[in-house]
Amino acid sequence: MADKIYKVVAIDGPSGSGKSTISRLLAKALGFQFLDTGSLYRAVGLYLLECGLNELSTDEEINLALQDLDLKYQEDKVYVKGVDYSQLIRTPQAGHYASVFSAKRAVRDYLLDLQKDFSKKMDLVAEGRDMTTVVFPSAWIKFYLDASQQKRAERRYLQLIEIGKKVSFDEAFKDIVQRDDRDMNRAIAPLKIAKDAIYIDTSFLSVQDVINKMLYYCNKN
Ligand code: DC
Image (tube, rainbow, N blue to C red):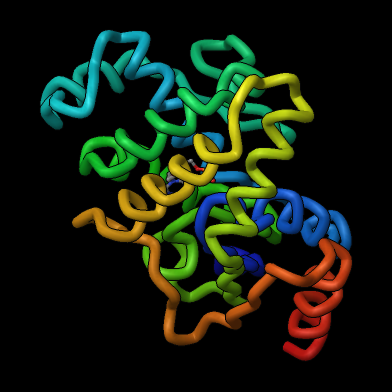
């Protein structure tokens, strides 16, 4: 019997575009599984940092370290060697190293099949930077969520303040600009708008407005 084909809603966009919150709620509304691929890159980034690696490390060194990484993603939580990393990865430092190490071929290759496998088990809402272009190029429906850098920095700043992190708005803004540069200009799987993606600017929309728009397109398909 042929394998069942599951539906994938693939969502890309830059840091602070509201992707995670929106994708999680969209998955709930559709009854699909949710996959936050940024959390996988964050966990790998933190793990490689703990292994003593940095941006100058070679793919060989990274591959060696990755051999011992037992990475699991279950019910919106990410585990490294059985330890729950879900909170540890939510720091600006983890975000920085996720972005740095995500430019490495060894890291992207390591995560590619793991991400694809999720679509073999259940209908899926997957969000990240290369969902629509590399990981799920034939997704059922594709979205690109965007917002101005100013708006995204405001959101990032408020999020960090809310969880008790000490940052200034200028630091949050600088972080967004640097991350955009790294995520959009890297050689492998850069963030870009897929030709067949539905583009939504979330700058002046509420979370619910964006979800309603996305549900409209999903129901139309
Ligand atoms: O979405 P996020 O901020 O949690 O992602 C952290 C970093 O991981 C982001 O700056 C780039 C990288 N990333 C990636 O390269 N590809 C993905 N599919 C998801 C995240």
